[in-house]
Length: 235
Image 1 (cartoon, rainbow, N blue to C red):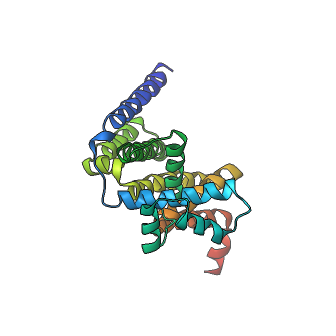
Image 2 (image 1 turned 30 degrees about the horizontal axis):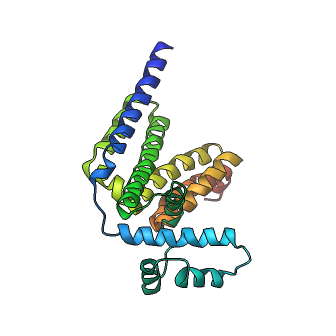
Image 3 (image 1 turned 180 degrees about the vertical axis):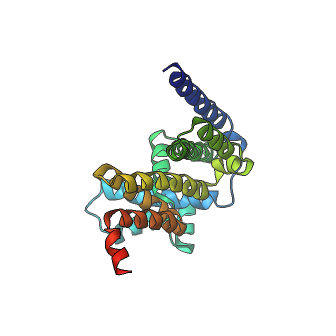
């Protein structure tokens, strides 16, 4: 009992330290190549949803016309006209824009720093699920600690956890997708099925490569529900 309490306390301490390192480092990174475009794209879809909720009587075409001609800045108008708005990675970006709007964050510097902080929080959530994923597989706190620290201390991943919203989002969502996929295969109840479906949709929306862990989970789920002895007799 004492050992379990000690391990849980150590786990909490490690993740608190990781989180503190992140919130004290997000201001140290500049703007990534795609940072501006991603912010403009996410803001476009956030404004679209916001207008749809505030003025539900407007049609899809009217909403787009308002966004492109009236209720958005010239910068957003330029990017949306020159290149089509993309929904790729937009769900998490829209969520970020909601908090920027909610907390009334102003100024490009503050906005991008807030996005970097938000991106690190997404990465931090991925680390938590990675810890749970390793423990689910090996039932070892040592392996869980080691794996999580290796992932966190990888220099490139640590740097990109602040400014690379697309790849870090995909990394986190893939980890969550694998974790929920294992739960779904082992016990396909409503809770696990719903969690796996949501994580699959979000990860697939971010990168098409998410089809690999999704397909693997569905394949093993298929094996669980099928009568394998029947197929063996046929063979």
